[in-house]
Length: 484
Figure 1: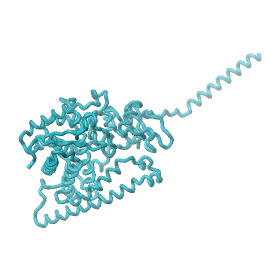
Figure 2 (figure 1 turned 90 degrees about the horizontal axis):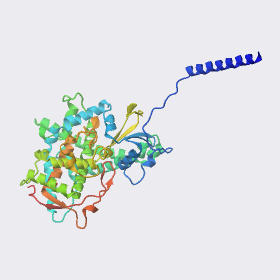
Figure 3 (figure 1 turned 30 degrees about the horizontal axis):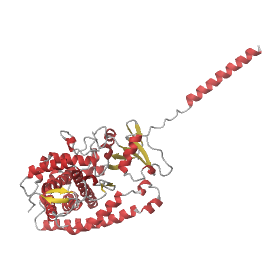
Figure 4 (figure 1 turned 180 degrees about the vertical axis):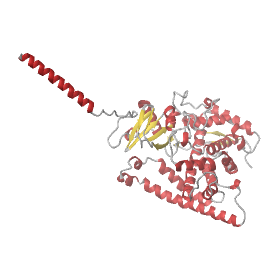
C-alpha cells in the first residue's frame, strides 16, 4: 500500500512538472533570431577592422584580397562606421537602385538635361578644339628632345572655360591652387569621418577646419564669377542684346535656371549654382587627365596595340592638320583601348560611399539602416569569373560586345551605375577621345633613353582619383602636320 501511494505521488509530481513546463513554454516570448550579417574579418575594440587596411597595399587592392577570403559581400567595422563592401556585379546591381531625396533628383536633372546633355557637350566643341590644338603645337616645339605634357592642365583649362567663359582667366588662375588643395584634402584618410562622435579626433585631424577654409576661398572666387556674369547680363539687357545660346557657358545656363523654371519644375539659388560648378570642375578635370595618362602608359607598354590604334587614327584623319571631333565615334578600336584602360585603371576604383536609408536584404544578408556601402568597382573589373585573363591589357575583349560606359553591365562600371551614375559621361569620354586621338595622330612616342618597357613603373597613388605614382614621361616624335 505504501509502495502504491509512493508511485501515485511520483506520477502526480511528474504530471504537475510537465504541465508547468508546458505552461512556461507557451507563455514565454519566442527567442529572437539575430539577423544574418555579411561575413567579415575579426574586429578589434575601438578600431574595428581598420587594422586590416593598414599597410602598403592600396585600399581597393586590399579590399579585393579580403573579399577573396570573406566573400563578395563583406562587412567591416571602420571605427564607429559599419561598412559593407560589394565586390561582385551580382550584388552591385542590388545596391545601385536605392531611393534618393528630392534635392538630389533636382540637381541630377539639372546636370543631365541642362549642363551635360550631348547637345550641350557638342556646343563646347570649339573650346576643346582650340585648347587641344594649342597643346599639340606646344608639344611639337619640343619634339626633338622634349617630354610629357601633363594632361591635367589641359582638362582643367577646358573645364574652366566651359564653366566660367572666355573672360574669367583671373578666376581660373586663382582657382587652380585652391582646387588642388581641395582634392588633396578629400583624397586622404579622414579619421573624423570614421569617428564622428569624437571631438578629440575632429580636433586632431584638422580636416574639417581645412576644408572649411578651402571652401571659403573657393566661394570667394565663384561668387566673383557669378557677379561678373550677372553684371554682363544686365548690361546686355540694357543694350537690347542678349547672350546667344551657342555662346553660353555653364554659369549662364545655371543663372537662367535661377530666374526661370524652363520646364524643370524648380529653380536654383546662387549657393546651389556655386556648388554645382565646384562639383563640375572637380569631376571634369582630374578624371579625364588620369584616364589619358594610364591609357598612354598601357599603349607604350604594348607596342602591338599602339601600332594598331595609330593606324586606325591615321587612316581616319590622314593628310588633315587637325582631328575632327565629329569623326571620333568612328574610331572603334580607340574606343576599345579606352574601355580596356578604364577596366584596369578606373580613376575612382571605389565608388563613392553612400548610406543605407533603411534596413535591406541583399543575397540573404541583412544590411542595417545607416550602414555605409562601398562598391569596389576595381575588383569587379578584375573578377576572373567574368573576365578572361583579367590582369592583361587586351582591348579586343570589347570587340562585338554591348558593353558601354553607361553602367548597364555591372562587371564594367567605370562611372558608376543606376541613379548614381556619373552624369558627365558624354563630356568626359569626348575629352579623353579627342586628346588621345590628337596625341596618337600627330606624334609617335617612345620612352626616354635608358628605360625599357619592362622597367616602366606602373605603381598607383591613392587619392580622390587613383593616378600614377610617378608621372609618365615620354618623348614625342612629330609625324603629321601640326594645327595652324
